[in-house]
Image 1 (spheres, rainbow, N blue to C red):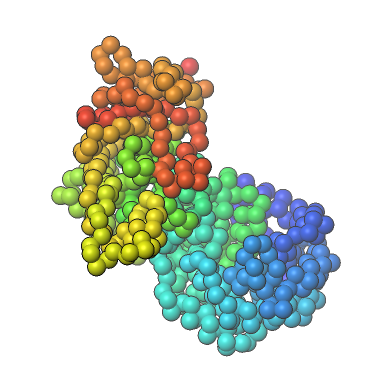
Image 2 (cartoon, helix red, strand yellow):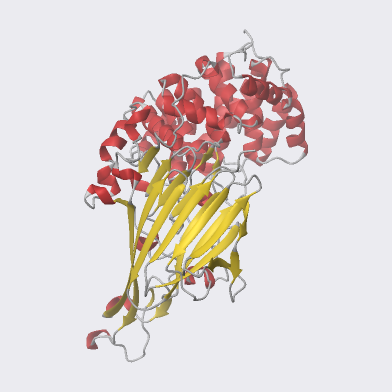
Length: 603
């Protein structure tokens, strides 16, 4: 068998791939000595095949030891013992996917020395099949992981039950939103599970529609990848929603998609993430290259970077995200969390109250939130952004044609518009209607002499009061905001109507230091109010880049952040990290915040 050649790869990725291959023996020994978990052991076997196929010494003994360790971890059901997910078919499926890929590759490349382990490998896989054929899942992405493992097993073991079960899961459909994000809206799970599994299923089951879905999802992640190779997560419903996602693990999928389709937007995202691709990502590129050698070839011409004269606007309506990139700055507007609909903060739901981000070079406004002293309901969580110039139409209606074009694989211009010629560039309107409740006495027919009423949750707290049977008096607070964006610039106009309550804006900042601030009574930094009544301060990076802040309508009230009873009842908070600036406000007057990013002085 000819050794695969890496010369077609970009020099940086080529050297990273060679270093990853050279490090496989030491890594394998380290994992085996440290009591590795089943997923690490399965990946060791996969990587041993990748290494030998690319000319590295065969890790026959290490792979054999990994298979023996996996057999020792196998429970009577066929699953592998793991962490808190006990006797877990989906967790086992992750390992089966790697092992089945290795077994399929060894069948195809029977000259590899590792082929001597084929019988041991297939026996181990056969013992997992019953658990995957009958087992259940926890999350949406598990359906694809377990189906992809079953599809590979079905081909390998010639077991039609595996294929039938995979088809049963797939009959539920693919949970891909019109904007290209899966229902979990998570780059982490899209990259590591849903996209690669859909590609496996498309190939193994000859279902090109699944490849189309994977392509649309890959392109959506490209739209969310910034110039630093970081992927936006504000819309996520999973654990990654608290910070940007490092795009390194996304690079192999971006690269393969761009080469296969010629898409310039995805090619640009592949270049943006290339320097973040670590040894594990480099091995993933090599694995994809064994199935499709073109993946190791050159990328197509990338889309041009945006600039102040030709900014890009990406609208992911279903996820409540608008990304406006002027080259010199990148802004993200976010709304439409699940909190109002669910009546609670919950794992697996979108709940991040951050509604604006603005990043320059070193300086970044990572979170802009509005807190209020109102029934302990927590920060304002706006509904989905609406394009003010679109006649009040929701972003979904405004961007429906563009998303349809993007999903169909249109060129990079299909879902990008120039600011100033399209209402998506601003102004954007955000709205929230928050309701506090007072409950009336029960009707005569609902009363109980023993006072034993149903324990119910009313959206803020629980009590044995049969809330659902009572008439309600509502106290309403309506928050309305307009956001305008330009190169290195953002403006916020905020108006809140309802009872008189204290408000406070929270700005979380990274990359510099606050200057020109005052320290409020709570020891928190607030802008200094100048004699003209305007609040002003600066956030300055080490290279001199400066974010200038100007506040009109700032109050002299307390500087506070109220995460809401969902957190405080547990003694917790969702306060973001970074340097914090607080802007006290009130419902009695409108507030205007102006943000200007100015570059570092030229030497």
